[in-house]
Length: 346
Image (cartoon, rainbow, N blue to C red; front, side, top):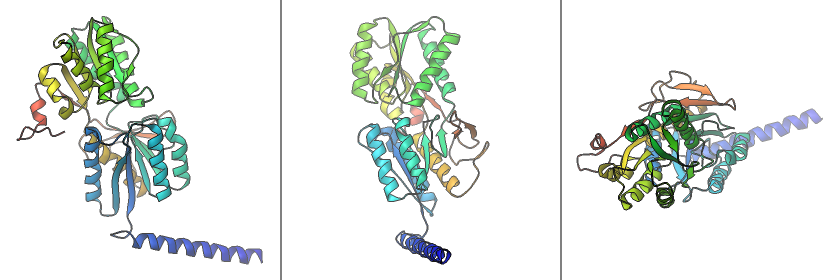
């Protein structure tokens, strides 16, 4: 009797699932669509406006996908976790995140995985509870490269200061770790002014803290940024104090944000990867995983700099995709990033 009841219950559950599945499919244009959602650190800034273009391109190229981007209006880890919880309740297929605080996402990612939702990150190479993380390049190598550019301008001597967006940001701190290691290995006459400074990915805070540094360390020569907020904030402080030629800003930024400062000389060099391409590749990682396709060394992920990726396991045993996608821009090649009208391409 128990076996018969169990069989009847199983049939009821299976029938209910089939009915629910049919209802969901009929409500989506184009039938079966995979819902893939990117949750960025912060909406309303140029970096993530550009990332949205890659997400939208992916959505247009794949008819069986509903792919879109969301984000909070503040770079608050709790707000990001709340958005992920909303997506779990919605029952999407894959959640992609550029984390503000990777550790805060672990419990909610586990909740998503337990609900059958795949989780992915970008800029979080040590992330737990994911199918893949996507990195534009090896973070140590990128930091070392930026240190080389900075050191050459400084004449390989003097004080410099690294910034991070958040002290909890894994990639920002990995870049600074690379910078510090390169300075230690190659530039014994370069000295760091103080511990890495947090600007909370806020240009005004970067400006204010740069003014403090310029006052406290009058011999400082270089301010090195990790968040896109740092170069414009630091360069504005350098201009205000009339220190162009004596002090310069370096770091990760976009031409549209830092271009005027490159032209004035307050900033000397910026480095970045194209956010749209990174967004596209993260969506591709989700799509291929959902489709049961293999992602391995040499896989072409469909975007420049990611045409032959490398895959390595992080300390938590999760796979990380590495591209070769960094870009250097200075005053000499800034025009390459403008269109015929003079507007910045990125």
